[in-house]
Length: 218
Image (cartoon, rainbow, N blue to C red; front, side, top):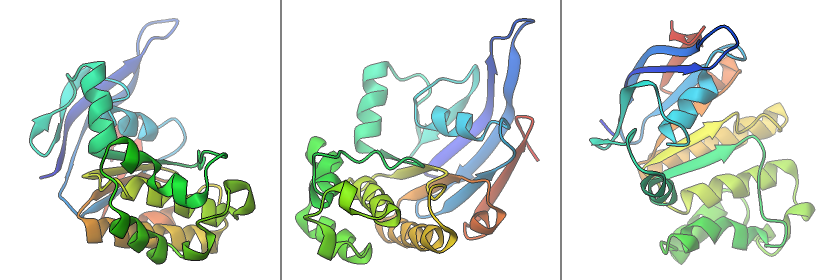
């Protein structure tokens, strides 16, 4: 298994003591597979993503990436893992306004010294961005900006892609198109995908679905 999440527990401090956010959360995902995390607001979906991304640490439980336990990494080791193995896609596009679409697309891969011009060109073609690579973000539509954000992550060739409501700012047609491309490109590159979504329709497109209620998988 590429990703193994075992018995995660997480609480936040409250005025009357710890408030349980996650309780005994477990699932696994292999390379090239996709999983949706669904649930109401406050159910713990984004917390799971944050823990897998090593942006926070669980109170107990384990997360393994390709057999390597990652919950105990130092801050520097976690940052290095995110630069090379884990790609993050958010609802906000977070493009750099002073860079063109093409420069944004290759930005993370260049930082990690893993830029592959042929792969970036293939991504641009698959994402329908070939005619827009010289444009700055302000000249792109919302759907085009999100495609650049997806391409920027996949240009790195990460082992794992984590997406938090990646189509939340798009209309239904654009959102479906971006998700379909993301799924296809992840499968092509062998990356696993974990996506947080409120949409049952979008969740149905992924191979696994894990529903959180009150911090518990149901």
